[in-house]
Image (tube, rainbow, N blue to C red; front, side, top):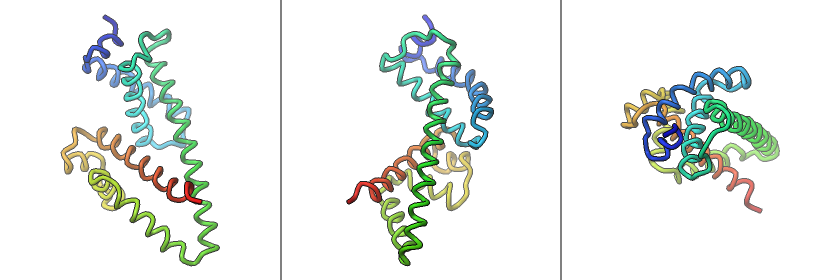
Length: 179
């Protein structure tokens, strides 16, 4: 039984082995090819990459690999890294729009503050806690994992990443889906 078949049958110890085996290769690749992305984001993206890899196996999208396993996983990660860069560019463009608006409207800060508070209030308690601890109290991922009883820092990073995505999506809906 090959690695893919083992993972598909529920052997998560194989997934753990793959995770640990490919991680240093992915970090080396990402650090070299995407030097502007900090290590914490690279690790978040790697976590998401492994999740996509696992889902591809479970959904039957991946049943055999013609290249090496690490090359396949790194390719998924490369796409995610490029998506991250595109999202950062969009965020900067959006901030540019807000700054332009600020110059045109004196009540800019009040509106943005109210919007952020509104969107934050609609988030799950888990997201609120993680974001509060990370951004306002400057806690490390390990500290947050301990405080909130998560398995480890990687679990917190993954959750934080999903929370930020949700937040950004809600900002986009609020500001760009309305006419």
